[in-house]
Structure formats: C-alpha cells, structure tokens
Image 1 (cartoon, rainbow, N blue to C red):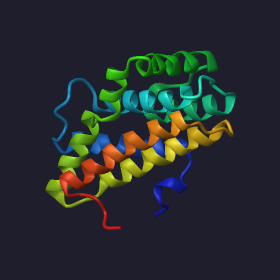
Image 2: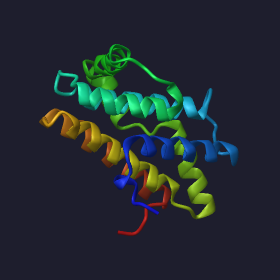
Image 3: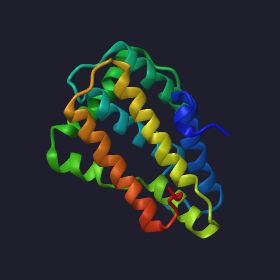
Image 4: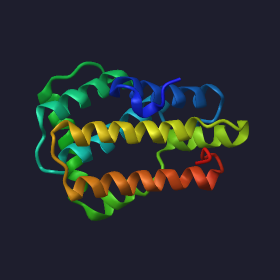
Length: 174
C-alpha cells in the first residue's frame, strides 16, 4: 500500500471519505446528517482556509481543490464556484474566535473514526490525518508560494488532530 502522502489529492480525499463511511457502516457515526457531507465540509473549510491564506486564489490551487471536491462527492465545479467556496472559508478566518474554534476542533466524522479505531485496534484515523496533511501540502505548494499564515493554519489544525490520535490511543508508533 502507498503511504497516503504519496497519493494524488483525489485519492486522498476518497480515502478520507471511505474511512468516514466505514465508521458510519460500523455504527460509530453519531453526528447529524450524512457522515460523507461532514467529511466533505471539513475538507472544504480546511483547504479553503489554506487557499485563501495568502489572499490570492491561484488557478493551480483551484484545480487541486476541484479534484478534492469531486472525489469527496461534491461533483464537478467551475473555478468560479470553487473560488466562492474557498472565500466562504476565508470569512471564517476574519473571525478570530471562529477560526480558533475550527482549528482546534475535531470534526464529527473523525471522532467516529477515532472511536472505531480505539475499539477495533485499527489505525484508520492516523491515515486520515496523514491524508489531510497530504492534501494541505498539495494546496500549499500548488501556487508556488508559502506564507507564514498558511503554515500556521496548517500546523495548528494538524497538530490538534494528531493530538487527538494520542488522546484516543490510536496513533501509529513513530
């Protein structure tokens, strides 16, 4: 099996959604609505924040974002539609409390995967967090520029999620 970060963005997104759907099928989903929609919404907000972190949405970032959107079950979208979705995430960045809440929250789909892993002794959540890191890096490098703000968003959120792996006792040994 490939290490998750070696996979293209659309496969990383599918891996995340499939893990969420597996947790739902196994009875661990307790969130509202669809687990697939929860995962897609998290991907949209996380990657949208990273894209808009430098106040510029580059065509290559939108291409990656579109592939992720499609793979997460949100269909095909024009660059204008994708730009609008990313800008909705940027609105959150303008509210420090909302941004902090997002960056330090564990989405419901990931909590379901964490609970499944803890009970079953599996490591799906670790792969999901690694895949989120791979998707974040794909967005961060797509425009050829990197800002301190983008790095901070990326690091803060992934450090929180990695911490959750430790709290649940499901992190892979390093």
